Length: 246
Image (tube, rainbow, N blue to C red; front, side, top):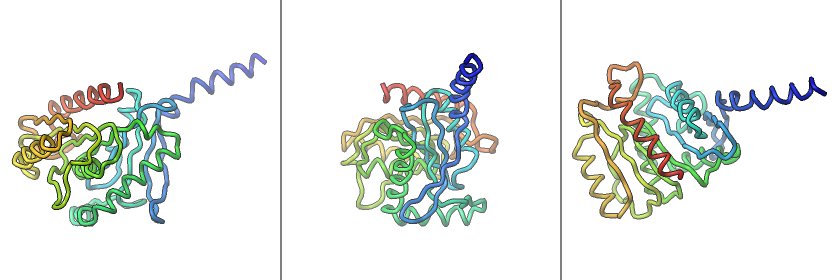
């Protein structure tokens, strides 16, 4: 009996660590195969739906997911390109993101499909913030415009333009925009235009820029990485989660 109790205790102690490690999750959307990543430190932990940048779901998103799990959040890192589709060449990255920019309905369907996959794993999809990096940030704002009932939407150096025919009149969660003032790909004119749109539609929002930070300033080990801006934006994001999930 004592030996059995020790085994049970060991299993209980080991379970959180195993959950914190996370695992690859195969799932289908509209008959197509996708491959996400799920990590949860505890049952019914608040959920962050994380959307990758233009090279697909890689070790970068997995690292960010594990960082969030250590802080008590469940994370489902979505796959919007397809299982084993992880482009490495710029032309391929542009192809895959371009296809979704041209088909916004499909983009929304894929985000919802990832959310559905998280729900099947027991994630609390009624208590969720959607966030993304670069392309993933643009996708998070796309989902915001869809009227999805999320608690919040966060973009790190993501695309900020609103496509023709869309607006934020249906947005139901708070919006947090974390941007680099030195970003030449997504200009401060676009940043200002988004601020005006959100205000027009009375969407609760906060928008911050970081001096000297170029596009993709949070990407570790790249020549664009800016440690100060990364730390500051991450800290604001974590406060946003605390405020939003309270």
